[in-house]
Length: 331
Image 1 (tube, rainbow, N blue to C red):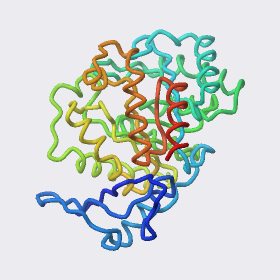
Image 2 (cartoon, rainbow, N blue to C red; image 1 turned 60 degrees about the vertical axis):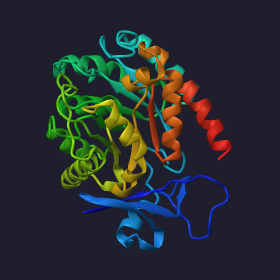
Image 3 (cartoon, helix red, strand yellow; image 1 turned 90 degrees about the vertical axis):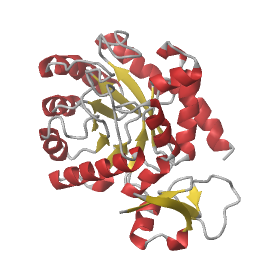
């Protein structure tokens, strides 16, 4: 199989031959042609097969009422006692609602509510317990605001309860592999989804992750999961993909994926980048405490925007919105 990674650009002096990347704010005139076992080479857009070029350039459809013509911010709201960065801070409904209001005021376009930590080493949460955590929070936010709500879960019954409470989409870190029934539930609700790549279960995924070629392996895995979602009745235009930074990846894997993010536009879906406060940012940025990683997280978010990522999943909504507004103004 041959893959094409568009060389994303944002300079205002755009050549006539340039193509718009995913209908958004980036453009490209060349791409890196990749093939397993072969050296890569740079090719002009004229050398990219028509079908591949169509996927790379076609505008992404609105998702959960949000257009994909400019980057969107997904605010992270974990109603858990043990998430790696904010565990225990917002697991009471009133605290969660207050945080939701703050994040929306600070610039979040969509809220991602999670009732089970999937940090490295985390244990699985009972379904009923997870529902008890998320359902009252989603219902309270929905009564308070029309901001789209994503449910961060791997489980069909949790997704069903979240939809009943007012959620708009599913964000599944297992990409429908943990509980395949969640694909049917999502399709039945007519809802969009985010499919994230992860190697293994949270409890063991960081033990010894190994890839032949991390970029191409993740690409192929996401393509396979998209096909599964489509077979369940979810249109590709309503699927978001996430390469899963930090989920079954070493620091080198994470950095390689970040350098090659634009390749995932070839899947023909909107792309979510979720790197906020991850361990590699603390390692490279000398910040052992996750709450001290705002600057590094914003730097990675801006890199993602430069590669055409449509959704940024972040803890620090105000800092990210401010940086993004300035970045877009000068590009």
